[in-house]
Length: 212
Image (tube, helix red, strand yellow):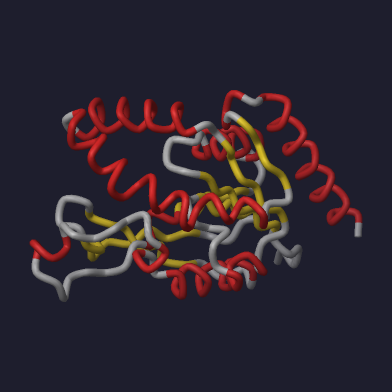
């Protein structure tokens, strides 16, 4: 039985900042060992009690949109080497699906999401906290391209959502969490030097714990 305490890494940053690219870069290095990614997006609150029209008004960039209590509970379970049933969010119906994904405990747990550094109790569970810091113009361009190409949105709807919801929520809730980060990575997945340094740090921690 593996008794090593898992290493928990939090990766935050605004929408389109490149935090997923950073997450994937770290995952690719350790995937042959023991690593799991927990996306905060999977932990949007269940809204089945609301009418569909009411669900459409959900502000997904606000801390209250997330079931943070469940996320904390699941991280604690993984730290105790217990498997979890990660929820699945159905964006078509704007509520939680009745499906779940079984996640086995791993040596490295990556928590990735726009607001993973916002909650103090969640931060306490992290060994390393990263913030991916990318200029607003690059973030909105990436968001426009993603939403048009992958989600069938119009450019007008993407820009309106950005100006009325995404930008103010970023300034109010996401940007301030930068001060909690141990490491700030400019330009996301394009910053190979910062990612290499992060990978080296993780390897050092894992090798040190293995020798203990």
